[in-house]
Structure formats: C-alpha cells, structure tokens
Length: 318
Ligand code: AVJ
Ligand code: FE
Image (cartoon, rainbow, N blue to C red; front, side, top):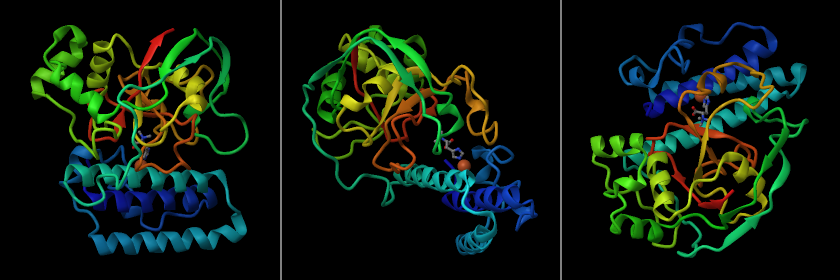
C-alpha cells in the first residue's frame, strides 16, 4: 500500500490536473509535485522511500487546489471531469481504508454489517440476451462502455454473499489442504505464503466473509461443486441479488475492454490493466461509495490480493 500521506497529495494533484490544468489550460499549481504524486511515475513500491509532503502540508496543498477548482467553476462550469475527480477521491478513501486495515488502525473495519444465512437461497436467472455496460448519458468510466448485447445461458446464483460461518466450514473441512479444489497458480501461491485462512474476519459468523483472494474464492466455490459468476452473469443477475455493496464480489472474468472500448479520459485509468491477469470484482464494499460502485462499475485486482474488502457469491449451471 501507499503511505496514507501519499494518497492525500495524490488526490490533490489529480484534482489540480483535471479540474484546472486540463480543463482550463493553466499551469499546475505545483509542477514540482507532479511526478511524485503521479501513480505511474511513482509506483507503490517507491512511495515510502521518497520525500513527500508532511500531513499538514498535504492538507494545505489540497485546500489550495480546492480553492482553485472552485474559482474556475463560474467560468468553466461543472463537467464530467469534476465527476471523475469526485469519484477518484472516493476511490482513494477506500484504498486508504485498506491501508488502515493492514495497519490494524481504526477505520479499517466495518462498524456493522447485515446478517445472512449460512445456507443461501438460490435464484434462477433465465438465459437469453441482455444489455451489458453503462447506458449513454451520465458519467461512467471508459471500461463500462460501450453498452452492448450479451447472451448468457440459464444459471443459478446465491441471493446473498458467502458468510464467515460458511467459510469456516471450508477451512475446517480441509479447504486449504485439498489440492483438487485449487487451481495450479492458486495452490502455488497458497503454499508459498502458507495461507490457511482469510486475511481478516469482520463481525460474527453470519456476516459476509471478506479479505479473501481470488485464488481462495475460486477454490472455495469448487469445494462446493459451484463456481464464481462471470461478470456478465453478475451484471445480469444484479437486480435479483441481496447484500450488494457490502463486500466486493470476485468474478471469474479477467479484466479487459468491451468490444469497441475507447480510453477516456486517459489510457492509464483502465486500458493499461487489460489482459494482465487482473480479475474483475463487482458490487461494491462497505468502504466504497455508491456514487462509484454502481451495477455497471468494474473494479479489478490481482488474484492474490486480499487486503481489499473482497468476498464472493456462488453460481451453478450456465
Ligand atoms: C479501480 C480501484 C482498481 O485503485 O487502482 C484510483 C482506482 N484509479 N486512481 C485503483 C483508481 C486511479 C483503481 N481501481
Ligand atoms: Fe489515483
């Protein structure tokens, strides 16, 4: 993860870049900070080793940027770029909560979560075509467009997320020892890092499991003769599901652009992550804003990641 102060400076730099520099053509407020707070020029591994603004300085920088943004609104109006920047900040608040979780600090765990049954109800989703992706009009990320037709076979999906209690059955039933339930890559990862349980347990038995990797989620599903949903199945079923938006839900789909994808407003938001082994997560989490996590929103992460607030639900058939 990044040091928390990096996120603060990055949120400010991103806002200045899009809400002032790109919108009006003016120079950045702090050109000297641009490289340090650019996610690609300064990747995570080095963020802890370079000079960063101290906490108070970062807040001051952020305040100055916000004033600049506001003062340009009267002549330039509110644009899609502003919405991009609002959602960017909201996404980074979730990233910061992941760091808080890893550090065992307040704010890294949900205050409360609803309860769900250990034996979930299965909902049948009829096969046939449906429109996938964000409709025209309104803000959506580039990777949610273009909206396009997809066909899925009939399948059954659990109405509610997998709970801690159900995960415990897997753990106690040899889930982390039964080779046949794991993919080759998943097994190698589990062995190398000696993984024997989720990275965290929040709430009681009947709360959604979180902090499981894609590798674990995939093995868990196989242990029950089920599988993870594809992202098109998830999106088609989404209106029939309960408990969406509590934990991100792993899908079996590798992150890629929809046919006809066009990068907007910059390639590094999504395109550079396509076909690089990232898996799509859907829904949202207790730490995510519903303004970001819509039913067409696509999150992605590597299959070994588990500091994220990630759980799953199951699918059969299809
Ligand atoms: C969509 C959560 C994968 O954190 O890498 C933040 C969001 N993009 N700044 C990420 C994002 C640029 C992105 N995820
Ligand atoms: Fe960012």
